[in-house]
Length: 495
Image (cartoon, rainbow, N blue to C red; front, side, top):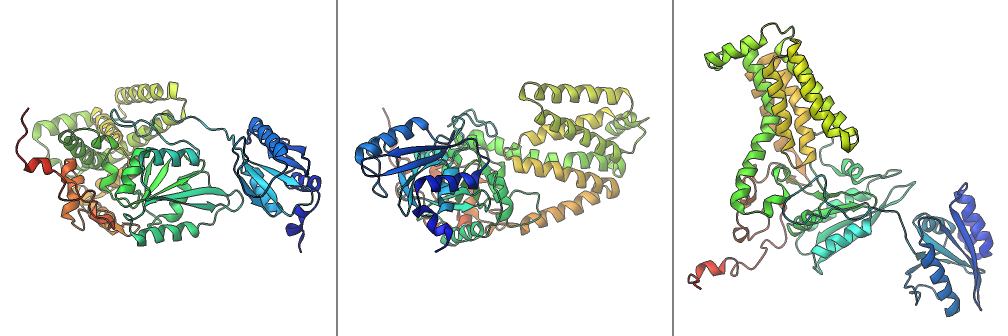
């Protein structure tokens, strides 16, 4: 028998020394002897990860009960226990926030779950704010995040499976799905990709995203990232799979389509007639943020004949005396705008917004006065930045920011023909993308007519009886078809 298997059969004090040796130097390790009428031993834990008051209560309950009896619930404090049989398992339990209880002469120890891991309280969503609907957002605790989902989805078919990823520092990860709704092939593929992850340490769920993504090199997000429990519940009821890791305040959902990145949670908390213009605005603003600077460069460089004469004269007058070509002017302004936006993000919140706004105004005005850029270029670049701010998905915002530059360079080289050729290539690339087997441009390409009710428009709830066909859910209908909208077929109600 190896030392690894035999070490817990020795004296409790020796086991505590072996645990301390594995972790040393470790000034926050605590070892406390305990004794009952039948047994003696030690308790080992890390200060700050274990609730010391609950531990003392549990030890008192242990003394009054006469000793531990394997897997059970300690009667007074209600502490859950789990048996550990090796030294490595004991060390892992200590690092996981448990108090390890070792008895003299026992062949195994007990891990008491007495977590007091530092964590922030549940707060409002900062990255996905809404005026209507729930305001709670995930935090960095896996157990709290799972509880927030269960609070909203009180279904016995909600299933949660846990995985451990990370070789040096294991991290708990959970996948959530609605049994009887999710496609079995999708669930099997999610499990397979997670099982293949080999990494030392996982700090955030976004690291997992790069391991499980379908396209290895794509600027478009093929997984949906959210910090809102209500959005996760909505995705589960559509037949999708959610993934949450301990230590991350965000959740990933798969599959996802391009149109979903342009929908906001608030679309479903307002009247459907109000959601229509907002959806249309976001679609328009995405393509504006990608193409607007390129179109401006192309019209001024190669295709001036497409501009009305008064406008052409006005724009040409603005560019007279500018020492740089229009494409260099546009690229310089775009880089400056991105630098200011990045600076505003990295600075403390109290001064970040002020610096980005004031810096943009001051630098833009100074550049125009110095004759380095034209006023029209400042307006175009600023409008492009504002257009990107209307997009609800951060991944799509970043994609739009990156795509601006190749389109501007194509416009500077070939004019509108360059924009057209690059646009066709971009649409072809988007059509080839898959998110866990689902076409990225669905339900437009391929066309799924029934799913068009929640793409550019948001149809009334009583019209969206079926779940999205693009995800191939097992249960296709949300409610029995004969009850949906039944009141509309009856006699008109009068008071």
